[in-house]
Amino acid sequence: MTAGGGAVRGRTYQALLLALEITVPALLLVAYAIWAAAAESFYFPPLGEIGERFAELWFAERLTDDVLPSLRRLAMGYLLCVVVGIGAGLVLGAFRLVQQAVQPFAEFLRALPAVALIPFGILVFGARGDSMKIFIILVGAVWPILLNTIDGVRGVDRGLLEMARAYSVGRWGRIRDVVIPAALPRMVAGMRTSLSIAIILMVVSEMVASSNGVGYFVLESQRRFAIADMWAGIVLLGIIGYLANLLFVQTERRILRWHRESKGASL
Amino acid sequence: MSSETVLEVGGLAKSYSSRTGTTEAIGDVSFDVARGEFVCVVGPSGCGKTTLLKCLAGLLEPTSGEVRLDGEPVRRPPPNMGFVPQDYTNSMLPWLRVDKNVTFPLRHKGVGAARRAELADETLRIVGLSEFARHYPWQLSGGMQQRVAIARALAYEPEILLMDEPFASVDAQTRGDLEDLLLDVWDRYGVTTVFVTHDIDESVYLADRVIVLSARPSKVQRVLPVDLPRPRDQITTKELGEFTKLRTEVVRTIRQTGSRAVSGTGGHRSR
Image (cartoon, rainbow over all chains, first blue to last red; front, side):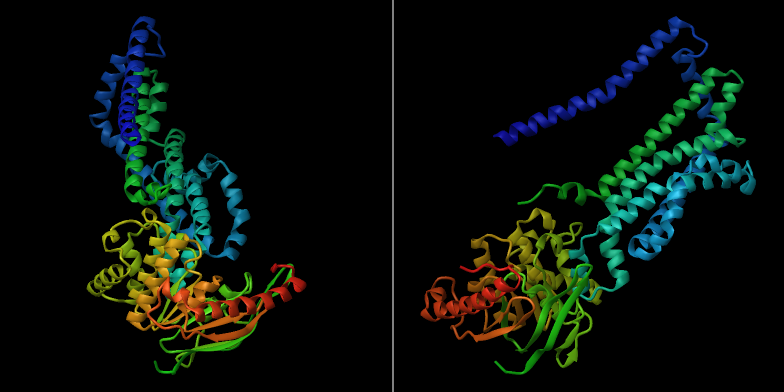
């Protein structure tokens, strides 16, 4: 009966967690609303005003003028990170010599703060278009994916590879059907870290050199002393980050179900 | 049973070089295996049994000598060879369900989907795991996972089956069951089998011939024909005087080579 009791307790606990997840932010919002209404601070406009601006801005033409360009840059930059990171990671992980040769250069690039390359990016790609932002996202956010992929490839069980070889599975087959699935949990972990870095770099690159985008809008609003607009932009960025992560976690749950459940499950 | 030779091992030697020097794992091993025969290879621990099997499987290249399967020299894993590794935990792909693990080699062999499903059904039924086809391997016990490994080898429809201490890490009861399952399967398919083990009783119980290896660098110390009647039974076969005599012979041979190993490397102790 302990198992049944545990399941019930587990379910109650789950409900408690969900309640906390909803009530705490709601309470914080209410607290802010009450406090801001009384404080009449220039820096912290009333909640209603921020909400109003939020609706006016983001459900109107700003959606196509600023939000979509930002999302497009993020998506393209991130996609490039995934393709380059996994592609290069597979090669570097599989070939010791290549990795040895590339390592110092990669370590240097990784240590370099990506934002330091923004001036260079402007020089090469120009300030206005998407290319500079995508470039900055790539050089800043590719590393967690690359390094995790290399580690994942290295960590593939030799027994699995030997089994595949014993059954005459060719090199390409072993990479596709053994190495990649086995390294996938590590790749996904890297992709998750990379996603939050990509969002940061999107915002920063838009603040430094852009004529549209949510990052640009936040800085521009501050310069116009449109403080409610600024907050509306910040809140939107928070929501974008939150939703992107949520989408990511949901996908991960589906793809890596075997990995989550294989931990400590056996007859 | 015909006495046509399937597998020939001639003057096989294998040494590894590392920073600490060269280790001679296999000194000079020669033997033949006839079609349909069940051969067990035993020897003191650390005598290079696994190395030998990997050379037979084409997974390791011998330093000298040669392995021939159907007269063809083995340079890479042959397409008509099934392989059951020692450790079941890292021979199953954890992201594939049991039936897909069984058919994994077949997909790469180019066997069609319908035939694959048929083979998975058949072999899982034979090893008694039909109802676990849609489970993941990590949901099964060790003994069951090793049965999946046997099903996978059978589904490959091999001419020869190589097994590397496959039952070493399961409990005694399960081991007995797996031995009987294997004999049943071997009888049914008539597949030539080379079975490496450190368990002397197991080798005598299963084999037509037991090949006893010496300590490292291993040589064939002795070849013992086992003429125990088949089908064999865990109780009645092991009660036979002939069984006891054979196992004592194997123990004696291993102890002789083992005591030599004590003076040589101190690796193997004998009372």
